[in-house]
Length: 218
Image 1 (cartoon, rainbow, N blue to C red):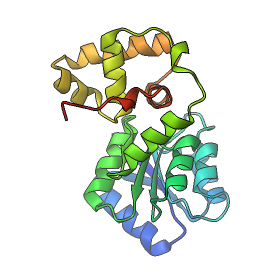
Image 2: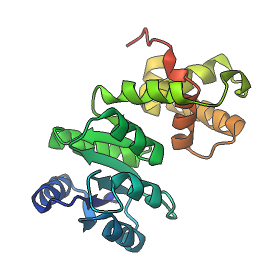
Image 3: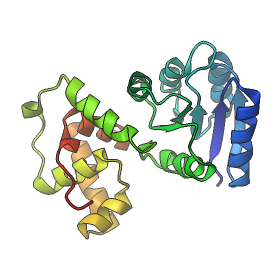
């Protein structure tokens, strides 16, 4: 089935352009909105898989809206599409629950790919922003690393790659494992950490600094 997408932007021309790109790629735009209040109401009515949200929208703004969307059942995956690449904007959006962040200079192809990846539960960032987010989460984390549940060497290795934004299939190719084996390791890790999904796992990995080891295989 086609992914169901909501587009939130207060600039009609930009919103229409994004909608056209999504539809041309075979996605279904189930709702659009010019402000946070409209977006929340329409998300409740249409239950989109992904919400493409601009930060600078009339109240509630994009960050506040993202937090409110996380309270829906089921919540849509949020991809921020903003003109701002500022440190604080990126970090606040991710802390609110956004799974991806693209600046508006991204190409249509990059946008479509990001929507698909976010829908699958992957973290997606405009190049250069991922390292900013990962590093800042590590520094701001209040949870001591030594209190982390004991993970095996392989679980830690996979968790580190999850924190870097790789998909399960990419991790499997990198480590010469089967896709099923990677899934099993992730599920074991989720159980140990008492988390419920990959989004929670990514955040835990970032907070605990699992991204802090250089990737020598890149």
